[in-house]
Image 1 (tube, rainbow, N blue to C red):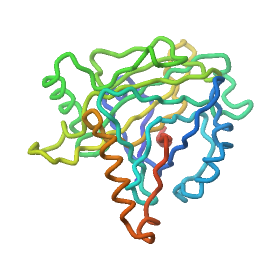
Image 2: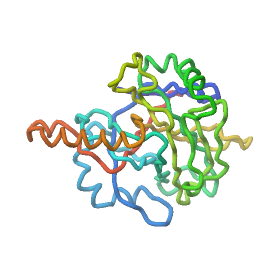
Image 3: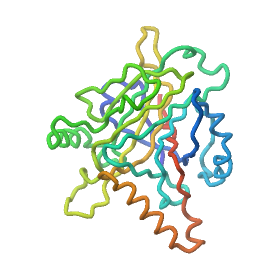
Length: 281
């Protein structure tokens, strides 16, 4: 399924959080990087990545993107090959997203030694909920007065500047960062997937969300409005420790499957790579 985002990205578009037409998926990698700036060339050279790259969906086009965002949370093993990865998160837990500079030499020289702005949003994956997103979020605000859907864990984060959380946009945070320096942002998601299910009688599967990152550079007026790159991944959010239990359950189910059945599923990766959102100009 393809997802698309239309530009220009006005404040209203960003607030709406309507993401459409998302392209295939990638799986994550699981190695700690050094203390210096994160580089995707270093990541791609890691042995674990080379060993597992054959397990990536074959329809991934593997093109080099200017930035890469890596969510440090494991993907589910109960996802079939060629399907998009699914990652389980615990409500309120801080999760690292590594902001990687993947530019080739001479690419985007206009942002050399300059800041870029990234906006992180938690939005709905299902189209049915996308169309009623404003009402859904307003209902959540009414039931959880004073709470936010998405927060930054600023003390844990590294390399972010001027972090902001608009009080009227509960599902959005933003910050500036220098692509040439090590940058890791820690996020907390406070809503859980079952809060948006149609019927609440216990045992609901819960709706999937998307964690989406949009990155912009400055225009001639020094406003961060020129779009550079967008990427997102599919997640489900559980009550505290629920994500760990769900991951364990999925793993045990996969272990019981016959070898020929296991071959139809992706392996679980230590981290989740957000995949590019295609842009319609």
